[in-house]
Amino acid sequence: MKTVRIGLILFVFCGLLFPAKAQTKVEDKALDTLACPIIGFNFGLWVPQGAMSDMFKSPMLDFGVSALYKTKSNWLFGIEGSFFFGNDNLKNRKERLQSIYTNEGTVIGTGGSDAGVEAFNRGLVGMLQFGKIMPVIKDNPNSGLFVLFGAGVAQNQIVYMPSLEEAPQISEEYAKLYDHQQRGPVISERIGFWYMNDKKTYLNINISFEFTQMWLKSTRNYVIDDYMGIRGKDNNKYFSHIYGIRFSWMVPLEGKTTQEYYYY
Image 1: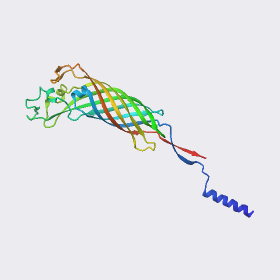
Image 2: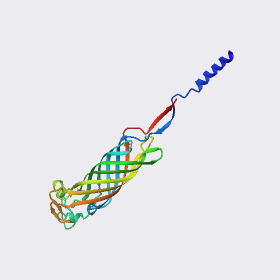
Image 3: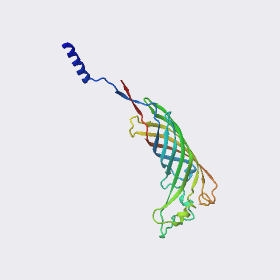
């Protein structure tokens, strides 16, 4: 009997030291896929060809924000808005503004001296998008090669900025005679690499090559461009194709990329 009691005591003692592993965590295992909304902050470097290249120097910069939804089957659907611009990049500025430039090659400001006019292009793009991620990383089905297509509307125009004095000739309503504001449809194709970290860190990025096409037409009723020989309604159509590299930092808004498993 004494031996039995000693055995029971040892059994209970061992049970306290080494409890049975009910609900013991094994490890975090990746889900098959993650479905969630994603906000993207995008930066791009553009090299235009065609009509935009005829008017503006390269390269241009592009900044934007996108809102995508990634499905569990790795389809992407969303919208994107972006702003693109160049730095004092208008070609043939004096020839285009011949009527307001002096023989000395200046634009006279309100103080009677050179206004120091600079000319930039400014553009906006809004698109609907859809695409697909094709996983290539083992144990991370949320990352891989991706393609993304977009279609929407683009607008581009010249913005004149006097740096020394005000120049009323190219300000406010008068600027509309010279700004070449154009608007029209745009489509975009991207192919690149998409990476979403399975530890829910901030390392969620994608980088892609971008190919964009724009079909723009003047929105102004009267255009003055002495270089192009236009004084009146501009009925020309302007096609541009743009090559670029785009980087995006992504912020998933919800969902989880790992799931806890237990055994009894």
